Length: 145
Length: 145
DNA sequence: CGCAGATATATAGCTTACTATGCATTTCAA
DNA sequence: TTGAAATGCATAGTAAGCTATATATCTGCG
Image (cartoon, rainbow over all chains, first blue to last red; front, top):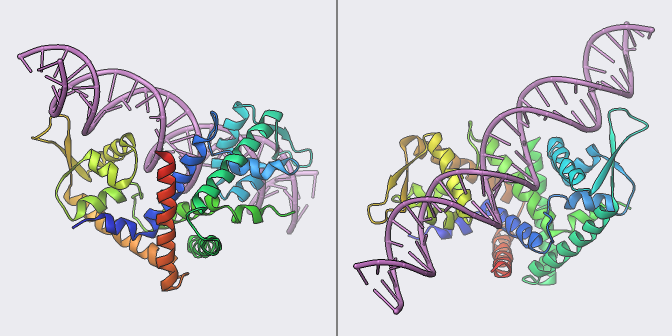
């Protein structure tokens, strides 16, 4: 009896493997960077400085996860933290010049990999896939709250 | 301009978020365990002892990742490592009694969460989703090799 | 005004993933 | 048969996710 059949029938296993492979495919296309900062890049590229809390919310990660990601990005010269004049508890995050350069490269890599992966699907299927994932996320978020 | 639209259109982001939510949903249903050992449970539940290499292959993780997972499982009394009589480099991995108990619980949790998530889809869509993920995995693995 | 509770961030500690590398054993070719 | 290459596992170090908890500031009520 071949158990590989069972794994391929498990949504959890398949979604997890797809996610890891996409991250690795993106990171292969980055020169020295990782995929972790990508949600931060996306949030800050077309706008003003944002507080950490908002970055965590838009990336859908917990606050300490975002704090650590921002620590690494600050260490690598990709972001700056400046105190929020309106709230002494809060720091406003903005991209440095180097950060904007890396962000552009990361967005290119993500676009390439998304296109690569989606080449395996018909245009109709691409829409369906996103729609189905949206619904899965909905019930899973409901379950968690 | 609302950037949340962009995130929801990104296959990478959506697949990644779905994967994290499924892991968390499973772990909420485990009493004191995590989801990391699940591929090992699946591989060892219905069969004989297997070498580490085979476990890494079936879980689709790198060898050091599996070695670390097995270290934690051994520490927690879930598996035993015995030398392979046929190959002095290799260790054969088998579940302990406690391991089989935890494996049963983990399989239950995974079944529950898979069913919960898939309740958001029609039966036809469930098949389509797995089929599409299979194809994404195919092109991504091709890209990586 | 002042204190209690809420809120924003930081830190500690764990898991699970990765790459790079080292060590021991096995295999194969000369 | 023996030495080089391949193979199986372990270890080191980093990233990115999580929970729990600490600290500092803000808000609002009495």
